[in-house]
Length: 298
Image: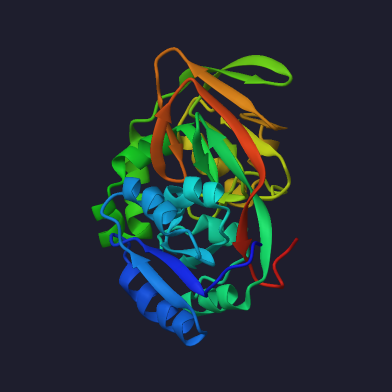
């Protein structure tokens, strides 16, 4: 970590988060009492975040995000570019990156992790030039992201996820795609293709049971079921990342993948629709430094 001239933290708060105001009240007070100077931003749009961070990066000690995975996705590009350490106050609906890092979901305890200053380096995924921490996908998750409005998340939280997911599943149909990897090209009929950089996504589901966010590998699965009801049978193993054991789920590990479809389909990265197919997936090794508990698994 490069030397800094102050204990100034650039704090990005998601004003649309259900817990955003609470986060800045509890965690902000904790960080201030630890001797940090907080510079706050509550952007109206995710597109404002990167330029704001870059404009204020000089002399800052770290970037802190009080929000969920969508808010973290919004700062990913700026964090990679400025190389400032990233602190996370989990204040979203799913908080999957926090889970992957072993962070406490209690906001004050998360602030204490930042104050303690213990760090590790993690990998960052990239799809068509857009960075992501957890998972980028084509199919069901992208359809869910399109339907799941900020108002639903604020009003209903996890229940909103479930209600919207039921709606999306009710009209889900398989689509045809080609998956290109180091091993060649395969053509599939699938409900979803997901490429994971970390372990968790979708509110605690594991992309692969042994995946780590710093293992230098991307984990892909293709959900090749013909009937929606079969997803219910898969649900238990999805929570534990063991869905690759099912015959209907194609699993692969590699450093890069490409997904092609006949017509452009939206790509969901960390809950945000960021691009369309054809989608090129790659990874930046050890690209971001994050604050983690000293007891977090290496």
